[in-house]
Image 1 (cartoon, rainbow, N blue to C red):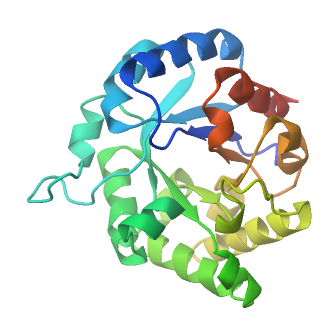
Image 2: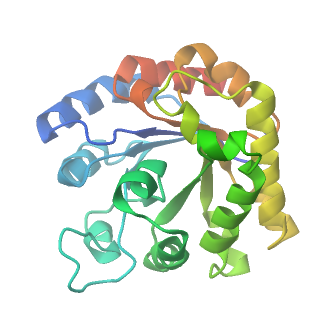
Image 3: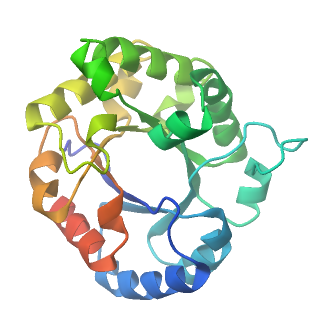
Length: 254
């Protein structure tokens, strides 16, 4: 991790936790992170629990994000949620382009090109997810895939706002599989993503935070976070338990 960039540890709950479970979790996590400094901690919470979690974490250093957002401020988009609906709840940001959204729900790079600037415009911090499938990696298409995802999603972002986007690199073959990219693979891919941002603006590339996601656990967090270009982690399964999530936060602090 670079000392010039504030690291981020983000937990993505995916489709887990009722309001009651979410409140119990927050009660368990808050005391464990009360003295965290120099580190941003984010929870990506299902829509139904957002209000409750925002309310129960008010005044703490936890930032609460939605897991997705529609690019239009309103409209005939049944089942979707807009930026004004999120900002009304005092949500801080939103995940965008998670591989599960791409894989199961047809999320496209073209939609993300609209979503990322729409989030910024609304005052929501976007966390853009990028990453290659196992097929793409085996075919030698990792860089081509990342180039397409990053360039499309950032194309309409004003240069002076690039640093407000956090990027999470997740090798899709490592999500929930227990497989973790080697340290070399992770550093290489994230350095490449940083170089892609430099294609838009060199200074922004030095400031933008790029996280690693894909089977991050308390056991492997410290060595991943020690890599020069990695500014934190997007944690899936291990974020569902406050103790294991807190252990990853502790690894980031050390």
